[in-house]
Length: 157
Image (tube, rainbow, N blue to C red; front, side, top):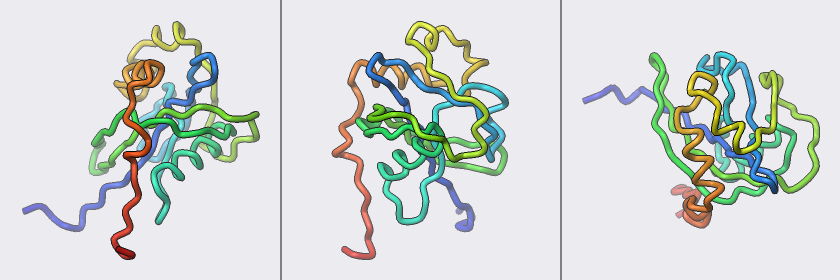
């Protein structure tokens, strides 16, 4: 039996799209040192009693400055690096307004990519090996309905 003191973190990532299906990517200094100057989806950790959708909206605003609607769930991954493990849940997000100032100091750069530009980025330029897959799922509207993403608090049931 494995040790019960191991903790698995949870993170959200967003395929952030505009009305032309351009995708917004970031370069960042991340706590697990996986970015290494490669393009990544905006996202981050889920706080305390925050549900997944709240976390996705908050992280989008903090890392990009954009407010967004969360449209669908695109993928769920179990990740590992060294002794760290985490669950990474990817959502489709669509911008809903003008950009405000990003508040996350770890973000070094943010950029909009047209579909052709993004799909021609090499795997050595992207953090997540399935970023192009989840982008295609989003623009083809094949994500899992957001109504199936729930926060269950067993303390109040």
